[in-house]
Image (tube, rainbow, N blue to C red; front, side, top):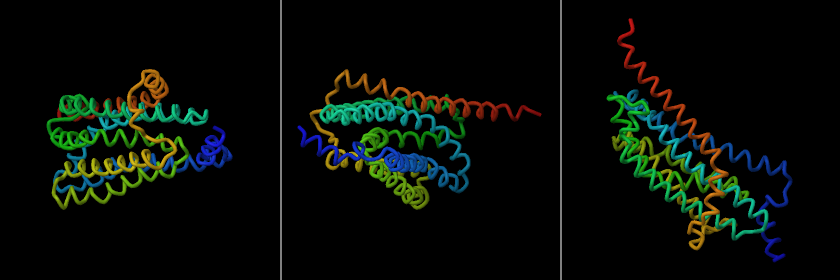
Length: 282
């Protein structure tokens, strides 16, 4: 038992390094990862805005999908930001088995939520886009982007939802890398699918899904083979106490991101109303 504890301490720098040094080592990669994650939508918008003839209206249409994208991210945070701290606490208590149960349960929850969100957005996507501010002119572009993007919901959920488990073990640079590699691939694929293959908005969505899929695969492989916490088949079965504990801790970041989504919906709806009444204003 003592040998196992010593091994874990050596493997996990969170157990013995100076708090100040850890703060710098962990915070900087985490901040960079968040900034890089923003590149996905930013890069898509830059390229879409340069599509000949339709760039402006296509960009407006894609913008209407962002509340839905943020909702998907919010659910990923609900599980990732709820389960990862619990796993980290268990590691600190030298209860590795319990920590891996949180990881396994979180993975299962992410898969279930991803499937539900994908089905909901595929069925009600068009109605939601109208509610969120799409017009007759922008709807076609919003649908082109959304319906492809939501097919990759499972990849987004795995990447955003399991990455906190990597950071929680002290592998902040690895966590940053999984996000960075996806953004780089997205930068490379966007012009190919949008302009070379002439897929327009659909191309941007395809490039994003492929990029997120590669990031998800890297996260998945790392947690199976290389991390202290291992994603194991025996821990995938949901246990109510772990689920409740995860959701209780993750509800705060979920509400924060959901609120941002509601704000964007309000803004989009306001712009739509203003555009409809502007011709009547002298």
